[in-house]
Amino acid sequence: MSNTPADLKYAKSHEWVKTLPDGTLLIGITDHAQAALGDLVFVETPKVGRVLAAGEACCVVESVKAASDVYAPVAGTVIEANTRLGENPELVNDAPYEAGWLWKLQPANPADVDGLLDAAGYVASLA
Image (tube, rainbow, N blue to C red; front, side, top):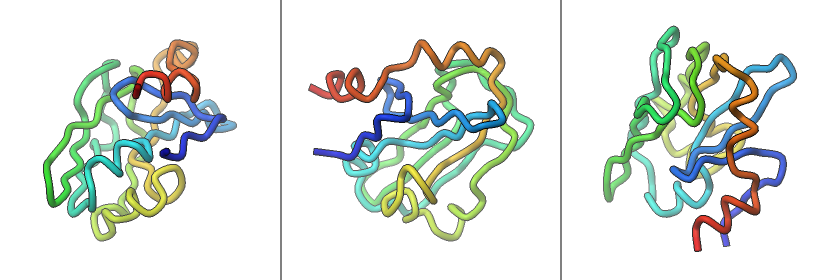
């Protein structure tokens, strides 16, 4: 079974969201998603300053098997991208909830995070 931390929120499209103390959001793909993709060889993060709509494809992760879009779980503005992934895409495989985060978002409406799945709901959605 994949690792699904209880302190995060999740989208059915396999993104996780961590609310940081300053109200910004850290976003990445779940352990389940990275395991399904296999070894990542390329990650294209969204550009800083890009305004995202909830559900918008904004990032690409590519493995030896396939390329996959990553979607914005909530609307907001990209305020930081994980530039380490350009040289080290395998960080997403090695530590999807830590060093392998994808981007940081200033949410348009912080309450939108409440509409995402909790860990139990995400795990149930995989069944």
